[in-house]
Length: 121
Image 1: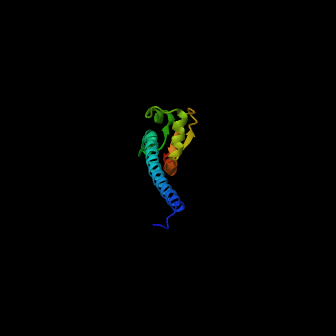
Image 2: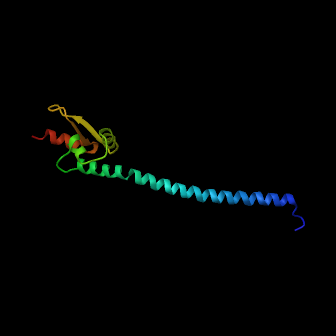
């Protein structure tokens, strides 16, 4: 070990310190990512439940359209604008009824079914 000078020991120390720092940072970042992912899931769980409720209501076998008032009654804790944003996220379209100027919503994938029902006497 005579060939190991002070300079060699310094380089070895720097390398070991760098590797240990990298390993510790990796472990901490992995833990932080896991925590952030769980927090995001918890924060968005209520929104996902609202999406499920809206999809169920708009997929009803006999009702292709639902009034915004009816949709809103089933959901609490969200503003009108937030509910409308969620409706857009699930692929719903808005229409205005001419008779009472009320707002109605339906799923885009049921548009053809909706048209067929309207044309059936």
